[in-house]
Length: 254
Ligand code: UGY
Ligand code: MN
Image (tube, rainbow, N blue to C red; front, side):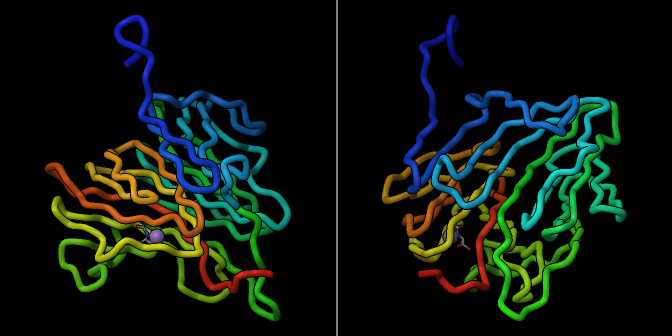
């Protein structure tokens, strides 16, 4: 809500390199070459302190990226939040519905095309890939989170975790979904080297970021930088779930 119905105010919090909350009501549209008939917003980026770039995309009728998203040495990932999209990794094509995703390793471009007349909503990611010395390269991965096994998180039956990508060392990052029943919470406040970009898929929570407790809900975006203390309590009436990226399988560099 804003002018003229209310005061200009925002839940947005930006602490570069530390953490950021970007609520949907404050998003602005960006022009990103290659995206046609799409509303696209850049979320976390190196300007915020992140090593990756996250986006939300609303594809209208005829919306597409036929130029190919990604560049040399860059890995990309798309997750369908609503609607239906044809996602292609060079020659391989997948029809993604809600919960569907596609990972493209470096050297493989990602092409997108809205498959319906209604809007389709996507979460998009890119990052420079860190190779493993003498190791294999990652490969194209597609799936749907509704077909993945959910495991208890840290032995808690009311918190479930899904890993979207293989745990193989060839991958330098993974996407996960954490889902907390109302009342569920992290077992401790984490402080770690890795960073996260996270989009809230459902529910509400109160999130501890750098020891500030902040209400968070569906549609909000969070950036959590390296070492920022982080944990949540889920509140409300439905599971509080979010999709998030996490770097993995690589040593810290000097
Ligand atoms: O995997 C994680 O680091 C995850 N538990 N962090 C988070 O949910 N903030
Ligand atoms: Mn974490």
